[in-house]
Image (cartoon, rainbow, N blue to C red; front, side, top):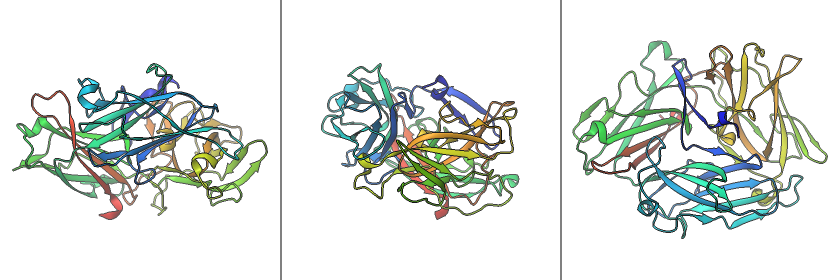
Length: 420
């Protein structure tokens, strides 16, 4: 993977200053033959990978290896702080069991053009058991060699010790009332030994599980007894953005809503209808998955092994040329990476195009524009920005006890702008 793919781009895409920062751990895939990485709470496919400590809940990791055959993949988890820097702990301090394990469950593809091997593991299990709450990075590597990194995923383990209440309102900024969504929230830490609420507790808020949109709240607006209130007019104000685009390839026998043509020969080829620029004056209601994707095959019995791959062809009419900048196609399916794999190419007809090899299922995606002048990513210029957009927000509360060498994850709340 290119170095640019390892850049974690923190930016407020509604015109607020952006900057790039190299983080040690994020959601990344480091081998081109590894595809369709899923990581979710095992109760629900595509859900946010958060579980309660000691609850019996698990997360499921699944991925395909297109090189075929079977390989030796090992994995481990490492404790991190709220900003995803490694905690100053030894594995014995955050793991009850072994420090790493091998992925033993795998399945060979069946009746597919594209041959692959599907690997799967659930965590915690009898060999990998975290014993403290917090952020964990899951690392998968080959041949028991941690330097042969295959992929990384962010895992959130909550030891609930605070209560959180929140609501989503229109922006306090009059100029942004039609575009922005503001999140106000209160943390009640009753029973938690907090010496200085301004430094012991902080909260991270992100939109649609996208860390690059996240805002770290280091200090509350004010303190009311054991309640920390975060409602300053200038904080936690998010661009509403737009609903995601989508396509459906649960079957490759019939054209679905967004599919123009399906070709079958020695491989599957799917031509999607052209995508327009959606930065329009008014919001249009569309149902989406908030950026998620689901691996599904309605013509088979187990999509882990019988869902096929297809070369998906995308085209975009942006009214912009190579002299202006470059669009990228992103979603949870590619971890929102801006790299050569997600970059579109300009053709002689004045349109942008690309093709991606994707497994059957339902996918959300959007286009991000990077201007040649500013070099900054912007997902509003091609998609639009509306207060009415339905978004999910993940609120994570971290606590560092005085004298402790690590941060605990003590609270989590999932919000939806559609349920306010």
